[in-house]
Image 1 (tube, rainbow, N blue to C red):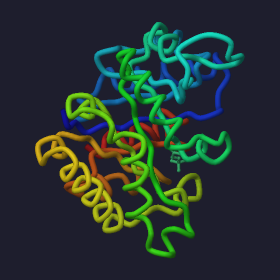
Image 2 (image 1 turned 180 degrees about the vertical axis):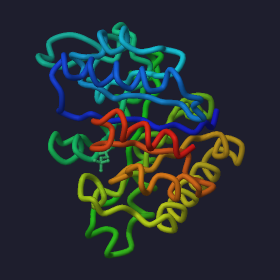
Image 3 (image 1 turned 180 degrees about the horizontal axis):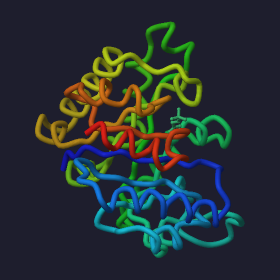
Length: 251
Ligand code: PGA
């Protein structure tokens, strides 16, 4: 079901103690507020169990930032979707551009990860987005279309309904360079049309499509005001409870 969502992506930041402190601070801020969107924090896997304990599950969901492309077995260092689920997380971020770029994740790998996440009852927050050269060559639509087609379009409509999409132009991630509200709306509408063509207008209307890339308290409101922007995936600004709340409060 389409829902406005503000999701944090802590990446490789915070020790366990710092992470629990940050989650506790956020929980305290939200306790006294009316919130008009779903809130999720994507935390390091080592932190999930403790962060789940530290927050009010009715207000804050917890996500892993990745899961393995294997169910179980001899894959040293990996964390399976079933393991993630067993920690109390409800979501998993998949296909972040940093995973694609630094860890060689392809659409084919992500297809398998998506299936495993869904099979284990996790909601994938599935990241797509073009790099700067692709944007400059006006290839962004092609790029996001193939990312969705190759990793997600084998899903049934019922399965696809469980996916949250995060559009993150790679040139805007951590750069302070944010997509303009018009650029965000244009590509979000395009992504929705691709989903409508594959499934139905109803499935497309029910899909949450988040924007990510240098989203901050100061620009969230105008980004989220767009009809096809259903919230954000927030990196840097999710590391300070007040800043993250400032984005949540944009709804
Ligand atoms: P940023 O990161 O908000 O720091 O640009 C967004 C993301 O990578 O999800």
